[in-house]
Length: 370
Image (tube, rainbow, N blue to C red):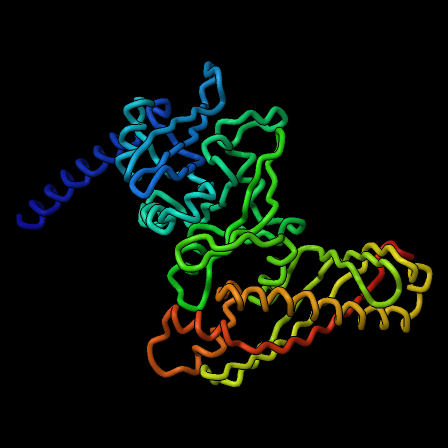
């Protein structure tokens, strides 16, 4: 009798659960606003402008994307106000891109808003983040005649590819990892609107929670190489090796890096061994006709090594002067330190870090030069 009673109770509980799940599934698509892109613009230390882009799937819609903007002090209260404007339930399951204007990155608390989204169970870890020159709202509201929608355009622009691998392509998980890690400084792609096109023409380097400097894309390639990324974007290099003006392009196949420290945080020294292998896809200079023998290729490799050591050394010296460590070089000292490692220790170490760099380039073929 007891078993029969338990079976009956279990049956009714199952019916109730199924009924609730069916009720939840019966939400009309037209009553839901699925945010695809968000933008944050700095107003002052207490307020910001929040803009969201919501794709419209109805064939009767006059525009393929709805844009809503609101001035707010909190992300959550801004979303409530946008729901009032749109008369839809705002959800973030389809969020793909978050834009922050340069003023917000330099003056605002970008960590706070990204952390708010990161804690939202609806938001995935692959949401891409970028800094925008001038106005982020204007990026979402602008017309791009040859693009289907701003949502697809931004997502495709920021997605990693072999030709744009110099970009940090920082997603929300990467951002939270670096900005909370005392041995790393965050980097984000920097977008600028030129005419009817958007371009990633720089990389924003953060110092703590705020943007500190803008560096060139080819310099961001160095950060990725020193961070241990194996596959890199093509490398463009100007040579000054006593053979007149020389320009070359190397399609990088792979790179490896080894870092050896003296483990001394009072007088830190770091030796970096960087190896790259690639195809010489293009060359312009007086040695073009000579690049058909092993000896000439070997000589070119030596010149490339010297030029890269010079360029990378000067770039690392700039980073040291700024006391930022986007490549995580201080990790080579932290792992041998007994006690709590802080951001202040990273700043102090980077400022006085002595770096010796050894580059070994292997040109495995000359591509179409022959």
